Image (tube, rainbow, N blue to C red; front, side, top):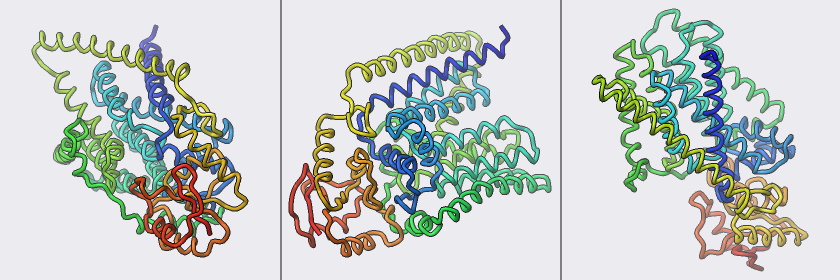
Length: 486
């Protein structure tokens, strides 16, 4: 059998291992992650014919909801479908980490070991999210830049298009990645040929932006896009300090200290030594991705932001071990790593296969529309049914002013713009005052807000909640929601 065929078979086997692992992580998860629910709801809305910004509020650019919405249109608007897509996305991220490490010079066993370390780093918080898609594109850019010595026009335009595509998933970090991708090659060279490459990359990056503008104009949503995605950002007042990552002495705290140092190391060595092109690439793209940690430096955002740098850290450590000179020590390490890597792969397959078996045989699953097949606690399912029955019994509109509103509206196949993603920064340029004015002008409706003894999501627009509680009449209670009448 030719070596190329063996490599293809080996890569397919590793991809299947990763697929088992991500399915074992994602499918047994209880319905509780709001980011997953919100992203699913965006896609469901598009599958149902609604337009972003015009018909539902969204803070980011719309490519991920359109991709997911297209799949849901074909396969059915079920969260289960999105979890399968999430698993494929996760596999792609870890496989890209694997081939980047191989391209950097690690052998197969060290690359597998390191990429599995990356899997364990992100698995607990992983779900479908535009930030993870941008991460995947960043890793693809790193790999292409490491691999390709081609300076052709076609190559640089493709790199620009790929970088510009990140803007269609999230405009802020997408612009950062696009700028870094287009301009970083000027650091060590500023000759005429390099300037041409930069120009081709800029042209490529502008192509996705032009497509977005054409779509917004054709759908008559440019104004609403500007209101939610540009002007509305000024109303986003929430942030999480980077120092919060150090509150618990765990692996995240350690990496939060080492990651900036590693980025600086890659940048300095890559700039000072032109032969270390790989260090400059890892430093530049690591920095571009790391900016994602601002303004919310919680564990989830940090893991996504730091992942390219974590790959770089693993590369530095494993390369040093792999290059140990004493023959006896080197042979021992290689044999030891063979055992460790094979055992690690075997344990991953065994553990996550068992998780999948538990999911199919034992876990309590939802019977709710659009959530069927998703594990759910009995208490949450009963609460959703109770609230939904109340909504169905009413002869006038019912709005839930809470971050969890989508959980109740999705099984009803309904969407209430601004209320089903009721978060600061997601309400347009007029923010909370605009929502209060809307409520003042409402007639003949019910508004549900959580009982005042319960805690609210940290991004909840509390001024609106307080206005309802202080100015409207409470007429009923359903589950843990107080019902107010207009």
